[in-house]
Length: 591
Figure 1 (cartoon, rainbow, N blue to C red):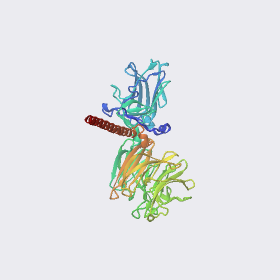
Figure 2: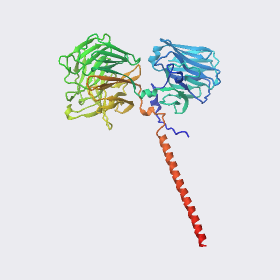
Figure 3: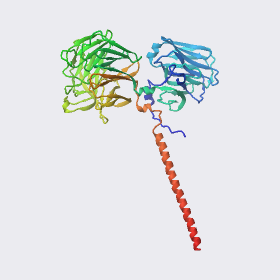
Figure 4: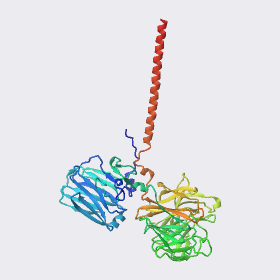
């Protein structure tokens, strides 16, 4: 008996958005032949098509490989086989639509870099037998082959990746597969998370794949990239233009490229003039300079702000001015268009701060911003982001108290404030009730549009705990926890984490810096998550529900009860028979 399968129903409108970065990745020539991916679209179910016949899908070449076959289309008697092949010479990528074993019908040439930057690009193959033509469309560019003898009716076998003796497979991904003619259409979102079964949009099992890599998992499971260590206090930042993570200490600059994975170590042309205590910094992408700052110098007379030129690797002193107090775990935001860097809140000298500072490039110092409206309660561990569309800062959460004095105790905040930078006015947007474990957010938030923001949150009051990704609505604070968790050892106050987004790679990146017992050395770990992130419910859309197990248990219990009843009934029947026979014997003796 086949198990009863229950599926979680998700609205199609949500799926169309959430599946932007998901699909099926094919293991290619980098793998042994037996481990390469094979996908049969219809499997053992023959589907006849007639008239105009179309195969369309989105494709990704995030890791371009040399050559191989994308898809093969075979007639039921193998009299005609068409394939789409791929070749990359390093600069250009060439797609060829071939009649297998005979000749090449269409060649389409693109710059490889252009395809990689596109992330996903549409491909369709249209057979029009009445016109005797084939049309290959890639990135909305059409390429034709005419005067062909095409079947008007056929039951094709469609294979992606490895197929029969065609074992050359490039590394590529597909999603949103559609196979249709003028009368019918089959849609395969390719949103599975495990197994070899493939489902249609309606949830029906159709076709089979071997050795798959289901990309939806990359939108739920944080991928650990690598770890860097520093024996002295280090800082880090993200360069969105180059997709680099910069890690620095007093001696060395480490550049880690998130696309290639390449790592470069550079020494400085002059000695670092600062005593780096917290490693707080911001990056000016236009000048390619890293501004390293300390709210207060640990040693009097030492600089509080210095820049590192990422081209020349030269340090320059910018300021000796200190802020009134140390600011552990302040939040930060950067307005790249207007070159404004902001910090808010923080903790130091047994006080919580409620001040907003903006870096003044003309005077090379952090200046306090005078704000109007009801002031935000002093706090640290808040998260901040800048929205260019309305020239406003948004400050979420944290912990502190109304007085700003640590001795009074602290409370956790789950509120959002807007700071309009055009008139320097504060307005509280919302405050949400919280009935879960208390958590604090990381320093910065990721803002994609005017609907929501993302940040990492964690219960900082445990030594060993976990970061989780939250998405909050700007409108009302409605939130959702997305993805799995990232471990963090938060014993030391200097330990911190942050969240970044790469538009070119379409991924979120989390950086976790854990300080050791000496409060000087640290380890910096980097994780990635495909965007948009998803919830556990969407990840398990095609997994058997726990009701399967309940059904099995209930069936077993029912069988046991029935067996018990049958045994009781048999015993009752046996005893009655014995009693009747005894009665008969007694009657005979009486007679």
